[in-house]
Image (cartoon, rainbow, N blue to C red; front, side):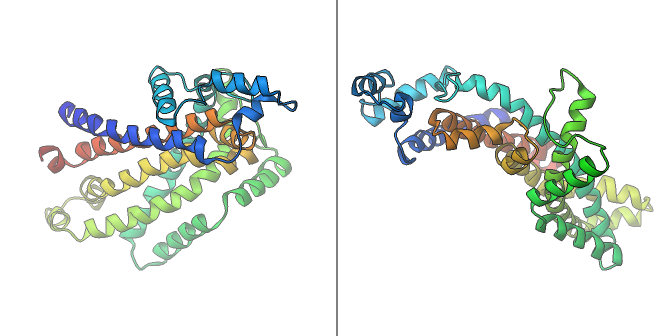
Length: 314
């Protein structure tokens, strides 16, 4: 396993290099001039010239990239134009919030989607299968922002069960923090649960027709043992792929949900940065998101080898 992970990390290095080139090019592709934003309304030519010299914007683009990449390797992604804080400090503040939201949403999605997919495949063609597919289609079709607003009106305004918005760190009050994040996690989790249900059902249908499942049944094993120990374990390999990719999407794409529930996470940070033309923050977020996707794929590859002994032997 150690040798496998080492090879995967070595392969990831050139991928990260290509991502860094793409991220750096964002500053050149986006409209507007960050120096004019920093110079203020007066835009004194001497101030503009000093800022261009300070941030090395007069250097050739390859020289600028080498300087930016060298600083990034040392953990320096620049300074936010809006808050004058280091970008790494901002990411360090917002990333735990989005990770908590993503983990809770993924737990909800797995708790709903995987059992529903297994039951739907086992009861193929019955009313249970039809209801599971209908619920999955509804989860994919209902927009997150609409579901979030409806939950706020029902659960928070009318019933008063959960807070309508805001965020409280886990370190201050774990129970209240979970209560605050429960609704947005459910909103995100329902859409992911629908996707997991469809993939689990498809994988289980293929596995249930396999020879080793028929052999397990012929040996007289209990149906629950056949489903969980023999069928589900092999069916989880494609589900793991989807789950890791969906987790990466949660880290990068929970923008609307965070805006609706006023959660100070990655989504709100990137929206504010785009509107304020805070290019250093946008670059830092995109770079961290790309690296997160790479490591999630490595984690998925490692999970394959744990779930499937044949892949481990190969």
